[in-house]
Image 1 (tube, rainbow, N blue to C red):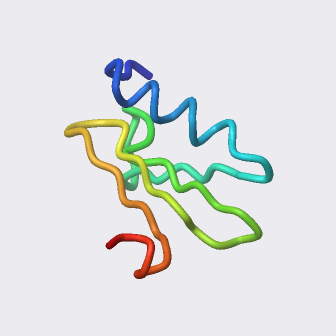
Image 2: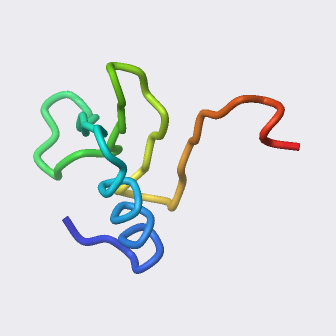
Length: 67
């Protein structure tokens, strides 16, 4: 999987989180690899990283931490 420098750096940070597991998301019958990676801790998603197409990430956190 070919990643841009920014996506690769973010993936390295997410991969280093203790206890994190990765679940690949891809389109049915796709042979191009995953569209996105779901990062989970204790079965709960905390980040979704798009690895094909545009550079996008969704992070979940407490609303009061965003402000």
